[in-house]
Length: 193
Image (cartoon, rainbow, N blue to C red; front, side, top):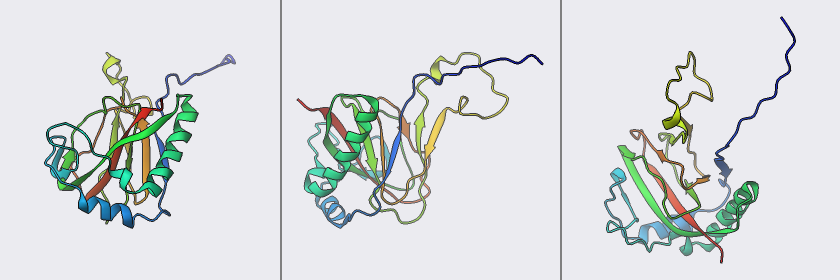
């Protein structure tokens, strides 16, 4: 066999960053969650959210716990530095509680740059967070003989207590049928003026 030289590029990367914040105290956050109004929200099946049912979003849960918001902001800064983005700050934030058997519908976070999910308290295992490949609609006739990183339609992130996940807001994500009881604090960002 002839010796061939090869260069390879994995182009148009989509970064999902995971930070382990399991050592930060979350008692104040859990107490703050108990004071927020709860709604039935269309994207959370068999669950509740502090995201207003009327869509007039004015929820800033993380403002109630500045010590946690500051740590999350440091992680957001790390993420945007890696991407070379202009500075963003944590803006709106809310919680979702999904009961066993429920799910989070496929969606993206319009009007945001970077979004995130923080898991302050998990009791037992929950279903993975699934990110949908943004290039899947453009694959017209690719038949894969085996599963590889190039054939995946979804990328799974397994939540654990203290996990913070950051991702581009345009990246669609969901959960399948929930196997446990999930509490997620979600947030969006906005550019710093």
